[in-house]
Picture (cartoon, rainbow, N blue to C red):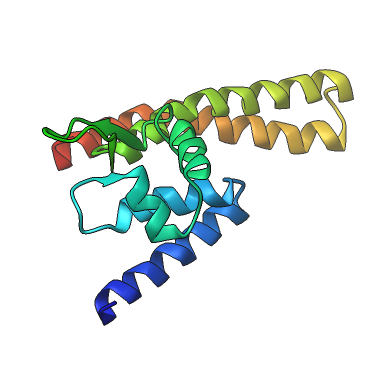
Length: 154
């Protein structure tokens, strides 16, 4: 393996480890970063198995988690009977757009805590800050994503 490819693989593995520490399943993170850092247009499940030294079942599970959130897409490959995958263009904006549901859950959780703790408590004070933060991010995120899409043609 050439030096540049080895460096890319190391960088991808470090990102995968960071994502796993942040809560993503390790194999899913490795598959995602393999597709993100590859120089190939697409990769098959077999390519991913070989690149990552993991089973086809592990690749299949990871792909099933990455496609619905918009990070990876299945693409046609004329003349091939195998499924081909690639990291989806515009994936980051799509992922952040989907985070609005999480932002709403966090905002609502803060309100539930305030209701349970009572308005004039130390807990309510902390939860108001949480609620204000998530309300702000929820308001600002769509405009930020739209601005990014306009600037970068996504």
